[in-house]
Image 1 (cartoon, rainbow, N blue to C red):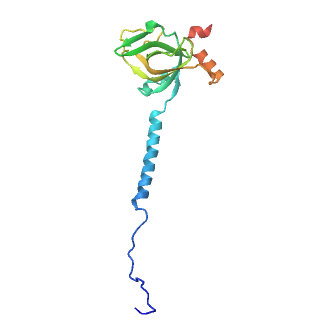
Image 2: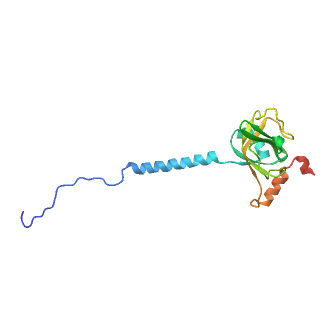
Image 3: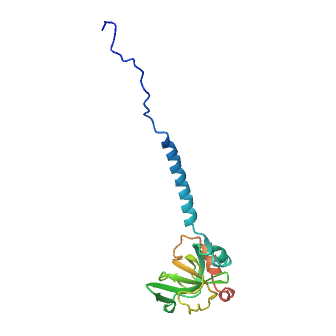
Length: 182
């Protein structure tokens, strides 16, 4: 080697791609799109509408077996003659009323301690059309029209977190007609 020459490799280099593979951005977009679709599906199938008993009664055929929340006031306290063990499950039969519309309810489990006649409740469940779990049962002061609300959760107002005017309105409108007139 001459004194002026150096050991430099002058052969052309091949391009080696060291960046992100082309399919990674597409995969990221696909994952984000699936997450958005999944979120929309989850929210639409798990959302519950809140309906007063009179409105739910009017829409019961459209609601079908869709789960929703129902507002009304029980026409009686849950007495022992309204609670039955069927198979392994306990059921309580009672009627709620709102704006003069009566809805028969079969609740799975025991109602909460604050459950009482005339105290507004929110029930979570769905409509059923057909025979009751006890076919010969007749709801005292009930609708007894073969439609009933299958509830698996009962919420009773018990603190000051709600607006008093709405609770007063629900208590007034959730009374049987004869009680409201007096």
